[in-house]
Image (cartoon, rainbow, N blue to C red):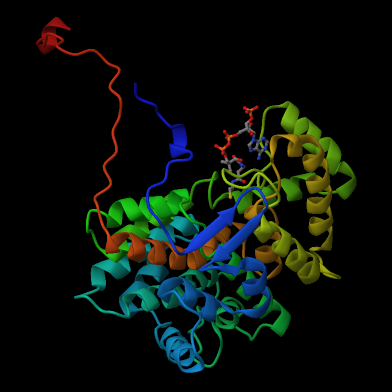
Length: 369
Ligand SMILES: CC(C)(COP(=O)(O)OP(=O)(O)OC[C@H]1O[C@@H](n2cnc3c(N)ncnc32)[C@H](O)[C@@H]1OP(=O)(O)O)[C@@H](O)C(=O)NCCC(=O)NCCS
């Protein structure tokens, strides 16, 4: 008897010391540290170090690592020329996927800093293309600023406020890793063949692009915009569910309760939209959440990371088509940490399919079919 686990649900593919999700209690830990503590006290630099190298850095280690991140922000000139040559209406995830492939093509040898360079250069690629599509001149990265601060600086051409930089910093921490999700698994499948780092990351980006994974933040924001008025939220949810559609940013394969990342993002979204033009969007989201929880919580369906992240990214000045690329800019850390861990005891991933067709059919020449 063969049991097929559709979607590989509940199938374990490796042991890990990186990320632990308690889907019943709604808890998430990176290397044993609670996501609530990391979002409150840590930084993009420190948490990415923690995920990649296994421990919280000392002062010197963090300084050394952060300096490298700053130094590697500049992307190669031929990639800049390539980005400038592109049409301005492309899907930014396609641009990011192709840029990653482009960087991989240019890489030579086995540079130990390649992973840090990837983390540092993704925001530059995203901000570059964002500004090009806005009809603006790209802004070169600054070596003076922190990771999130520099990202917003390259996007807007001016230094962000402390609150804005903090909001992005926390949002990126929350997206960094999530155990064996579809994009991480895709990256591991490629890495398990002993292909190169960039090819594995291209696979991760490709998988993250889908609306059931990293594309859901954009879809959620679209819902809020479609509703337009907080008083119409409940009716919208009822109608959407009645017509068989899903509430985007709700539901999760592992969490059967409120996603802890959504809890933190909700607070960030509330703070960052307060007294701004985005406040109504936040109110709509909150009202959709209340209505959807009433109808879906019985099935263990609650807000996930994508429900409020779109509002945060939007309020920070990113256009919705770019949201999945922001997710990728953080998740790349998790992809690499998980790939590194898998490769320590590598075995090529090669599952099986249960054949249900016929065998031994007589071959007919083409003019007899
Ligand atoms: C994330 C997701 C793909 C997980 O899917 P999954 O574990 O395979 O769960 P299933 O698709 O089998 O759904 C199980 C049940 O919950 C329902 N469901 C799941 N997510 C739902 C949602 N967002 N809205 C309404 N119903 C939902 C399904 O309709 C199904 O109901 P049924 O058993 O009556 O047919 C799914 O919840 C989803 O599509 N969510 C919306 C997209 C999203 O936010 N993705 C980001 C994930 S971080």
